[in-house]
Length: 237
Image 1 (cartoon, helix red, strand yellow):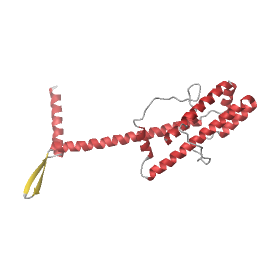
Image 2 (image 1 turned 135 degrees about the vertical axis):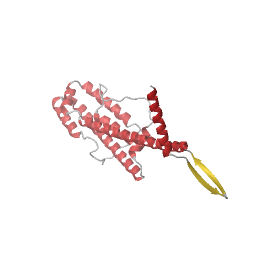
Image 3 (image 1 turned 180 degrees about the vertical axis):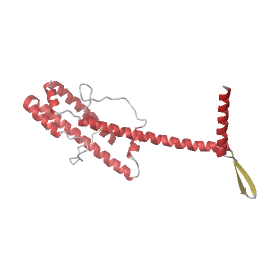
Image 4 (image 1 turned 60 degrees about the horizontal axis):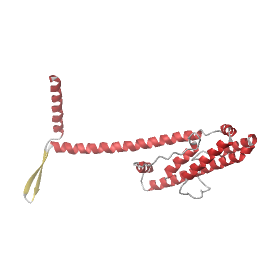
């Protein structure tokens, strides 16, 4: 034990000596009104100043790292949401669900309508007709195909199928509207030299409140198109 303690003591002494070599005591001479004054800056004070600067730099680097990780995580989550959106139910699976019972489909439509009403709370007004295309999936062709299949195989459910098609079309229009508003806001923010992503990250810090679960299916799942709408509205806000 004694040799080990001796080595530790020698190592510590060598480190202190090296630090003092880096920060030797310094004296400054000042002449004022015919008087000469001496200012001494000790090694310890110099080391404290250097340590404070290093700590500030490390803190800044840590904050930048956290912001970068937050942005990368948000980008990854957005990509995953788009992948889920691409895996929407096909016309064939929707046909099977219609055969399973009209009441279940009606319940789903009611839950989706509840979702819409909560999502657009505050009333955005009439949506523009010339919204940008390509920011969200277009289910119109798939919905029309579903309506045709339902009309042939289950005529009494045609109106429900048409209601679902109109609902999905509205959801996608609302999503495009939110994306367009977000793009306009981000452009305005960049014009004044600010980073929209960093502003969103700082605005989300410390936010909270009661968790309100929203779902569109009887199994408490959320249709990817509705999840995409929620993400777009959050970004617009």
